[in-house]
Image (cartoon, one colour):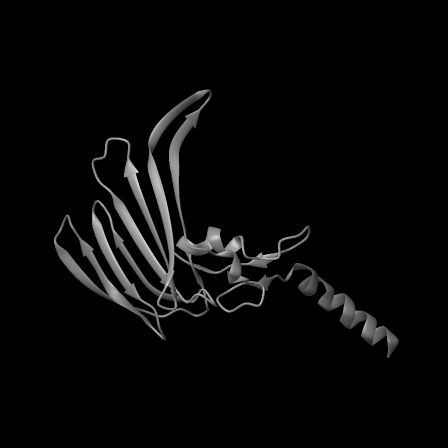
Length: 167
């Protein structure tokens, strides 16, 4: 009987050693008290050797209101030729996605999250509109919120997690 337990333990050890917890909306590891309304501005550079070539600017604006958190990011290239604006709205307690809107140089995308993900994709080049109806097999974090969500985790030496993202 002892040898059976030993074989069973040895067989399960690799699965336990390499399995990682999943951090998705509502995970107890996410502590949203660290996400506050704020604005930030970043300069984007392309760096090669010692040459820093400015590419553009990114702004982030987080707003907490109406029992929602919204994150608006805007990228403007150095020539100011166009702007890409994205707005992601999530539940403030769980970070579960509510909606996503993007308006870029060539496309517009609007998504609403629920049991199914619905919305539309519009190509500015072809002037065609496509209705979207998507399903996900697992809970996920909107990729726009990932950096901010990581700051809410109890990070310490040895902390491991898998973070499913919708991109």
